[in-house]
Every structure is written in C-alpha cells, then in structure tokens.
Image (cartoon, rainbow, N blue to C red; front, side):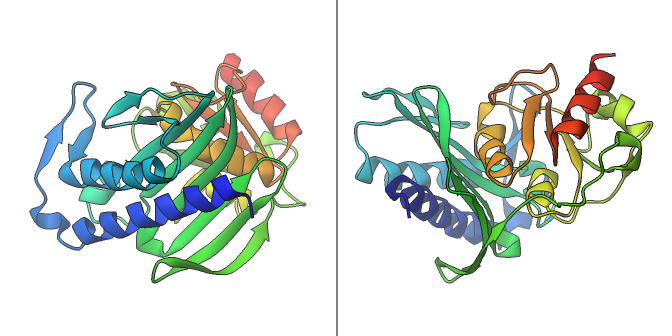
Amino acid sequence: MNDDLNLARAAAIAGAAEAMRHYAAVADLPREVKEDGSIVTRADRAVEATIRSVLTAARPGDAILGEEEGETSGTGGRRWIIDPIDGTALFVAGDDRWLVLVALEEHGEITVGVAAVPALARIFSAASGQGAYEGRLDNGRVADEVRISVAADAARKISDSRLGVVPAWGREVAAPLLDVADEVSWPLHPPLMIARGDLDVAVQTCGSVWDFAATSLIIEEAGGFYRGVDGRVGPAAGPSLFTANADLRDQALELLAD
C-alpha cells in the first residue's frame, strides 16, 4: 500500500480514537459558535492536534491545512488537509454520522483521501489510481477491508435517482434536484454511500476544501464523480455535487445552473 496512504490512515485512526474519547462524554462538552455560525468544541481542536502530530512526525517538511489551526508552511508542494470532525453539529447532538477526514494534496492534486466514521467503526480510503476501499475500525487497526465501487445499475436519469442532501441547512441549493429526484435518508455520509453503491446523487450544501478533499478522491476512485455545484473540478469552498456516473453529473449540473 502507498506509504502516504498508510500515514493518512494512521493519522485518521489516531484522530478517531481521540474523537471517541470526547464523544463518550459529549453531553458535558462545552461548545462555541465560530464567526461563520458553525459549532466548535475542544474535541475538534484536540483531534486536529492529534492528527497533526502524527503527520508532522513522519513528514516534517510537508505543509498542513486544518479547519481549526489554519495552515503551516512546508516545502516540496505537498499539503495535508484535515477536517478533524466533519459534522460537529452531529457530534454534539450524539448523532453517529460525523467524520474524521485526512487528505494529501500534491502540486494541487488530491492524491490520498481517508474518511473515518469512528462512531460507526468504519473507514474509507483511496489513493490516486489505486481504487477506493472500505473497512472496519477494530481497536486501532483496519479489518475486513474490501474494494468498493459505485453501483453498476445506478440511475441514469435524475428523475430516477436516489438523492442525499447534507447538512440539514442550506437545502435551497439542492432545490432543483429535490424537485425531481427521490430524496432518501442517509445512515452514512451521502458521498460515501455513493462510493459504496448505495446512493446515486448527493449534494453537500456548504463546506470548505477540508470538507471535500478526502471524499472527492474516494468517490472518484470508486468510479463516481465530484464537482462543485458551479462546475468546478477540484475541491474548494462552496456547495458540492457527487454522482455515481457522468449522466447524472451532467444532468444535475444543468439543473443546478438553471
């Protein structure tokens, strides 16, 4: 396995363990509201610090960008991108669908992505050209890992598709798709459901590069597509679209543009 992927998985697993320590006492966890209106807790900061320590120890020359601590400079065109707890609102509510996200960007391209779902004991990972995988988190290691792919029989028309929208706010972005697709509940982060073949289309109504860096690669290595709602190709701030095939991608982008 790719050394960088191994490192990203180790960092995500360490972050997941730290997150679960706080999640066990989430009812007593103080929370703050950031300037953008999102929630942050000491768990977010502790998880990011844990992930950074793993990455820095192994790759001291690499830059790191994290949601809570900002960016540290590096050399050589490599940058790790961290979302320590993606879905803090879910985390503080005791909802088990939150994520720990770690990705590697090299010269502007995402080459490694890991998404851990600690409360569900699942981990998803991908490296460029090596496929996407799902496994079970078992006492700090990955067990029962299998290669995953989008559904071969996924819908080809938006009107026939299964749609997941996340988070609960900002849904007006997805209104043109909600009008025609079949919205379904999501027991797992919708982009990951597409990557494993359980969903056809997903819209993430808001986010920054750290929200999309890992999942954009995972879905593409599983055979699906990632785009900004505005059509941009790489992960960046703003609403994002995930689809199981190119037909759905093109139809969705056309509807969203209208």
